[in-house]
Image (cartoon, rainbow, N blue to C red; front, side, top):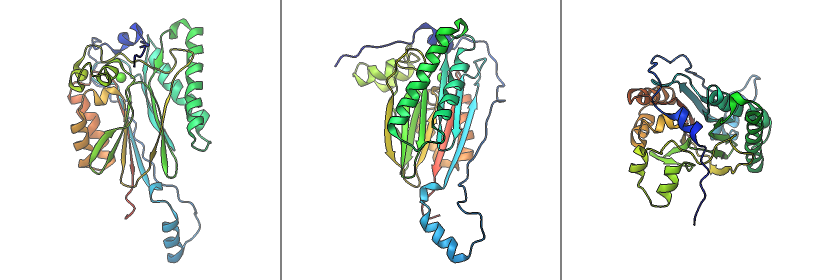
Length: 297
Ligand code: CA
């Protein structure tokens, strides 16, 4: 099957080139948030009532969410945005001229949260919301010359009671760590990923390919957009990682697996970020780690 590429073009390469002046020391934007399960009833409890409550509450409702975002060691601005508005979590990686990237990723986050926050998780709704965000960003950039060429990746988990809905456009990634194995759940909408799928190059070649920064889909660059929506079962013990290419492009999957398995999410998130910076931090680094607690706890 032949596919037509739709390149997001020069503006993307412009912000994704790695020749920006060195500007190390950008840890100011680190965000540290953890979510604890809400207590469904604040009233006094007898021992018996607590036991009943524990069995009634779905084990997966106990979770930890940790996010990190950092400008990295080379770029001047952090054009990534992290979404941490339970039950909606994820990453947007902006692109575009002077301010465009930051506007695109932060607007995508805010618009999506507005559209979904008080709604029940639903696949159609998720798809339509991302399409709506896309259209609004597209209109905005057509009306403002300063924002021409802006766009963003968007990879979000919308966590329901038993399932996780995933909405995805671009080359940020959602991974699931289950039974000690890290699996990339989303497919990159990038030129090199397409070439790997077509057997033209190997995944190893993709990681160093000169065109690895060219994405084939982004939110906000066209009036219409195709959105990947997936549904995955939620299982206690799973750890989900959503991250921008500034993490997985600098730290391989094997190393990421080791770091996640090594410690609790709060520490693992720091270790992942530090690993990306140690490896050069050539891009903005953003990640969300979500751990569903084991049922036995
Ligand atoms: Ca990036």
